[in-house]
Length: 445
Ligand code: HEM
Picture 1 (cartoon, rainbow, N blue to C red):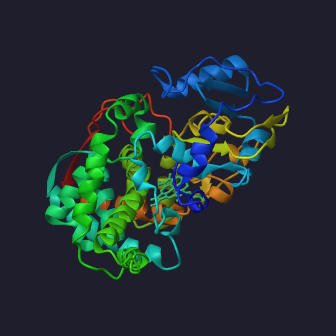
Picture 2: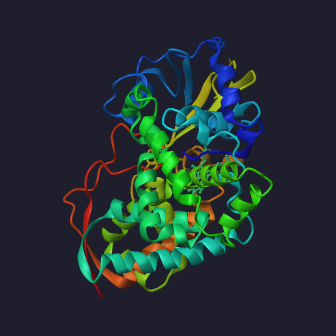
Picture 3: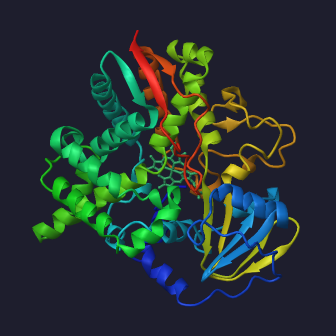
């Protein structure tokens, strides 16, 4: 999943809406859908979050509910249900509020309050070209760090590259080098909102600590970003948004928190998707040759295909006003406070035969080619459907393609994993993170 659409900030913070919803237990859905006893990983100890929802689906069919405390989820997996899901209007069933309810398990509320530059505004005309130019410098630094040969963990490599690219893009070149970069990397590795869905089982401990480590990391980001020099890229836009704040401390703090939110949003998926793209590429020598030959269209399709296969996203909309929701079999009256959801890993690779294979040619640019037996094209996705489709898709695919091309042009890669890497089992959102080390050897060509 991804986060922070503007609609959820209209009232200053999605917290305002969420608090209202949390005040009472939601009324029941009419007619009552089947109720699954399987828990979600925030509520109960779950070894494999996706497998648990898959088991509930096998027991109860394609539409069912789960309840825990005040939390109420209506899951749907039918073609009509998934299409109706993507068509839900934000003011009736909100993605922003659903994301916020998940992320606040990890992130301090202050990060969301009063933001002036939101992740949904990062991709205006001309922005992507600037970020991609930044990516070339980030890749220069990455190749210099790698040297002529060695072994590296694929996901450590792509995470550090993602930090470098993001921080240079949102906070200027000075944020992506030297001591400032290292301090920001350390802080953002603690202030990582994706922990809320990658390690949901760790959120009880985060709550018990009062988010102490996360709050300290946020203060560190503010301290490092404050003195950074002005920049005429996005950092200039962030600073301009705060130019009318007369109090210098409040201005610096606002700028630091805006950068923090932008970077946390960018950490959700991109580095992990690039990691899987490199894993899949390294396992397909013919594809490496095509990428090396400069076939940009093919490289983009490789990136998209790896992202599809690695999707662990829960797609969720929190109901704000009563809504009638049809899954093609039944029509449910869903009251406010419920979250309507579907889960990509239970659809992307199994909604029709053959979808479990890595095949970049199943894409025609960014569109899935017709698949025999697929009841709806919306049952498969990498970047979403409908109005919440990821605004960063063109940037992300271009960035992944550029990084893949530069790395295989510079190095011969030798996979050193014995079996295909497994995702973190408890993860229930975003692109998969690897459960263990994924070493790869590299040697300059
Ligand atoms: C490979 C990388 C990425 C993948 C696979 C991805 C995936 C997605 C998906 C599936 C959605 C729709 C979720 C839903 O409908 O519930 C989404 C939305 C979104 N993404 Fe991404 N994303 C990626 C990179 C990024 C980056 C780098 C950013 C920002 C820095 C970003 C910002 C957003 C925002 C703001 C939304 C919400 C749009 C809205 O609600 O209108 N994404 N993303």
